[in-house]
Length: 238
Image 1: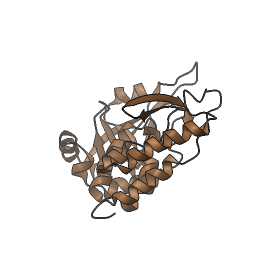
Image 2 (image 1 turned 45 degrees about the horizontal axis):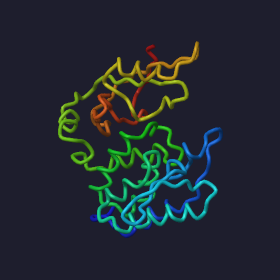
Image 3 (image 1 turned 180 degrees about the horizontal axis):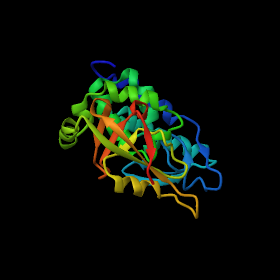
Image 4 (image 1 turned 135 degrees about the horizontal axis):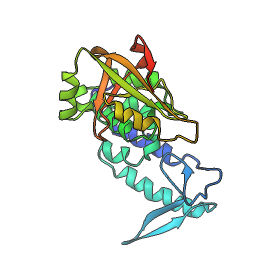
């Protein structure tokens, strides 16, 4: 990673995201949801002189151009990495980091990684970013910027060895990086998507402090980020 972030390259990246073609989601009206790194639906607000207006660009190229022009103006007027990062929708934050990494400073990458990881619904199964890449990001991160002050203190004070748990809900990756010190929290995660007799389960393992990549608690999850490949054994306990 660079010593300083190249905002011009990041701006160009976000512009390329903006001009990506959108895809509709089967069974869902595009006015409610689409697949696109910037737009969440085909309904968007744009500036119109001193006022603003809402337009629907589904099957309407003129409206789509209006919306893109509005976003393009916003991108080109951005002066910080956070302004550009916020234009990308939440489900594409990790994908953004994948392409932005060569142009980001270590410090900016560390702060953005923390946000992308903790705000993504299912970062352990992102179709565009594989876990080995994310492990590398965490290993290279500035730990003091990756975590807030309280999280960093917990991270530093972890015992040399301790028990961690992972709640594996139906359809979730049992080999993910998200574990927790809280068994009750793992149990909650394991049963989020239970359906009849199809239920999740809880795993446990012994983690070594030296292998812990981060600690996050912004969502009260007592999350330990650790590569399960570093465990000697993983047990199913419930």
